[in-house]
Image 1 (cartoon, rainbow, N blue to C red):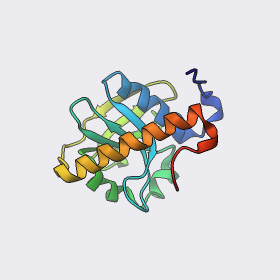
Image 2: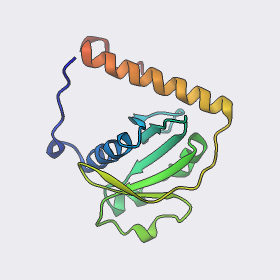
Image 3: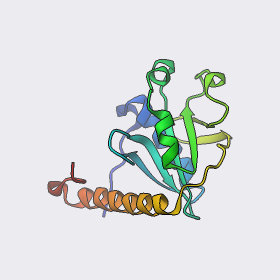
Length: 154
């Protein structure tokens, strides 16, 4: 199956950050799904599944207004082992909460500047999230091969 790469220039800023984050996490053997819905009313920018089953959530903020407008981020903490902000190098990172991780990213790569503290998920929630992650990833991959089926149910 041949996949075409999307040009970074054609993506919104938050998606460009997500791309850099995913590329970086790939190098650490994490699998990433963008725009993942862990629960109704929540949509995380990147959910990453690590080689030991760890689950990270990364919220990509394209600017100060984007960050200040985010009223749901604390609701994401119940759906991951570690929570990170991903911002570009110009973002005033000192305003981000110290109890969260920090990733500096661009269109092509990223660097973890501050590791997020770990808050392990309950086993039942982890199992449900890993299953949902696998199903969404498989459906999105299938939709690339057969666009007529759509990537996932609404």
